[in-house]
Length: 328
Image (cartoon, rainbow, N blue to C red):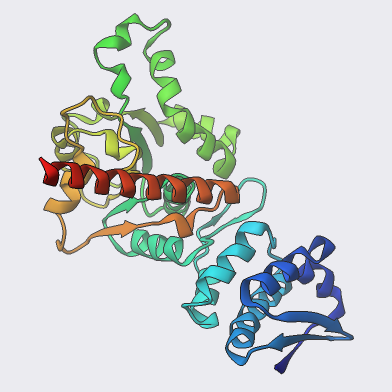
């Protein structure tokens, strides 16, 4: 059995160890090591290979504490899983991916390496597809990037859209005017805007026409110049709708298309425009496709477990279907 020491300022010990030492207990269980605090040192004991990984994780946790970041369960779990495969320097790169400041003064930035890659692609490419499960920050980070570009005068307006698949022929049967009919489908976009920009600023920019939130059908026949366009829930577009949207993009514009291909709500027999477009556009310059995974989920830890469980179920189901076909 060997030992390693990590120096730590006393004021960060309680935060790094967590309430009732929950962070350290999680590390001990994950890496089969023993971790104790002696004065201004953290001492790790165990097998050398396990100690080296635990040392990287604790160093990352201390670094986060020193920067004033919140050390929640999601962050601890992420460090544990990612530092087995990545270096501390790679993890630290996440902190350089600042996007903007929310209305509450909170910095909006990537929390995982996958999100960092996504944010970087949005900054450097004209069209970016962000594909991944719920809770990976696809829409939120795209909205933050749009607001940042607008505030920096990189674009003149923000256009946020999503397909309202239930709003086709059935829209006329819903109560209220057109805005009231489509609002329920666009509510998640409003919520993100309120949180990042604030309701007052949002309302002023809506009235000026600088921000537009509308169903995808409203994009037909338009050319969108000098705009930052976010197409959300793109897995529910048809191939025709996706082609229509992509050909709306004009000069000085940027587009981010987000979607979760495991949650397609299109009627049976309808192909997803998101899936088809990523196959067609693969390899074209200035178009990037970023795939986020369950490792990038930043909601409650249970969300990650739920996604994992569904993935396993779908794999078993697919395998069972193949076996049944082979027997026939």
